[in-house]
Length: 139
Length: 139
Length: 139
Length: 139
View 1 (cartoon, each protein chain N blue to C red):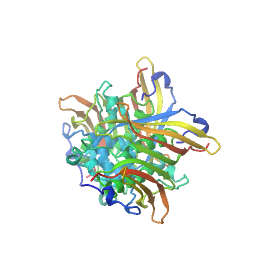
View 2 (view 1 turned 60 degrees about the vertical axis):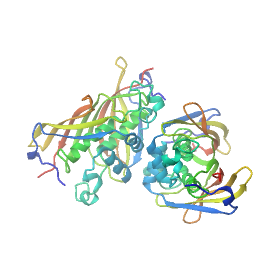
View 3 (view 1 turned 90 degrees about the horizontal axis):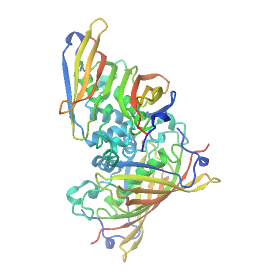
View 4 (view 1 turned 180 degrees about the vertical axis):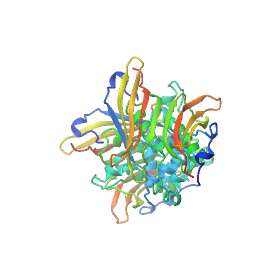
């Protein structure tokens, strides 16, 4: 149960997690975080917005990024230091979203790794962009 | 169901959301996002880590920030553009966390507001720091 | 709150539990068990598989069998000793599945009952077959 | 998103998944499967049973086995054919359970793999024993 150490990580390495967004994902996320914004849980309201229906919380998609970092690249034992998120587009119920994490920079001395982080829909449109800074588990 | 427009927002305005982190919050968040990192769901593992027990996902706390922005300041109709997160400390099961959003800058021309965003525990320790850029609902 | 004792159970007795499989059943089951296999939570992937869409976890259907045994035949107080499962076909979102438990054999001396256990869909197709060995509550 | 093919699997290979059982795991599992047996969700009843408190559903633990098979060994694309389960002991709320899957037999001709499957608690006690028969994804 230990993720990759810094010497096992190279620029260009990447990993992914994909999930089809369900109504229950959005509703449970709303309940857990208290973000019951009508854009997420009120179809009568949401169908009259620019997005024409309920959308997933941006932070739910960001959670998929955290999933890749915590489970796969580098995985368990990683310390999450920073995450910059740029919200570019919505995911709706039924959309399949892929969170992708790619290594941009490896600092052996400081044991830090800079990651490109994004969430992409089936059409290849980037919904969330950004970067993360993490510290992989020590050897 | 419409949040504050830009003319109703002033530098220094703030709002908050507080919640005691439950085990079920963490477990449901893990299931929704796929982040079943043992730091979150395995006490036998977590008690031997630096934090001495299971901790909440940083992105769960970030969800509380999204909750304040989407529900209160500015509220429904807001477009979430950017969120920078700095993870500084963990929240454990039973900790009460307050997400706080404060207006740093108001750009009337571009209809954009810069916010200081943080999550603080009961002892006043900042667990998550950062800033957000949002566009309030139009008049 | 006590189930049937062995003298109340006869070969041929049976009972059932039926449920329409919802997306949220599958998603919560995935989160609880950590089985986020794309066959269960990724429609973009699943529509290109042999089953042409997301399917329920076989062990979710097996949970319906456990439900009949623990709730009805014999019910509370039963000790579940063995369960053999044969996975024969998938249940998709919206399918109504009936778990059926039927008494095959009653061993008064050892207080043990052998059960035929199955899950069947609306068309009568057996999705899960198998047998269970249980010990009913004592008088 | 494809698991190991049969030529990548050898006798003795193993993988694991661990989780601390939460009350919400048991309650959600009860709700999903309909198995609201008082042994699982009624503390007033359960404290007077042999186990002296509420216990997890055996099939919830079996779900952890399915998680290892579907996610790791062999992983996505695996066809689950058979699972024999022997229930040997209970997991209570707060117990950390490890599901372990180990390759017993590889049949290249039939593309079938026999697995030893078990769930073990922190003290190393086997709670669930058994075997599975699976067909790994084709090359």
